[in-house]
Image (cartoon, rainbow, N blue to C red; front, side, top):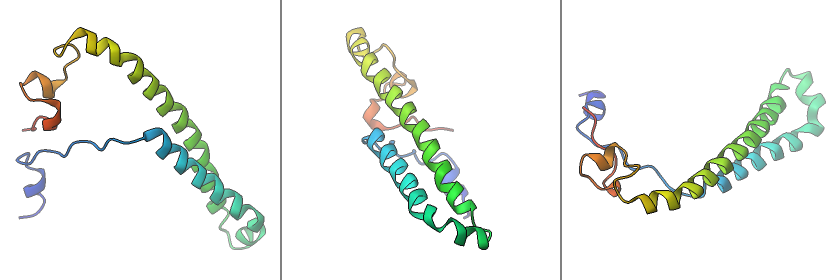
Length: 113
């Protein structure tokens, strides 16, 4: 039985979740920076126990979140700019593998074999 039941390619992968990606990344970044600021007054306690990595992990999460915000905002802007071009070009333009095999995008990705 094992994992072959799930990885054999007989099942289609689920469609990706859609949502407000920018808000999700901003929320995560705020959480990381908040955790860093909440722990900062206890630096001595963390240092005495060799756990300062907790603070630096939160700070690293916040800094990476700033990069993430920059990245997803640029991605959303690029998608927004490209939308009129895709619509004007018609349904065949920019078709990915899921559209080329005659399936609609809502059907999910093409099965892999």
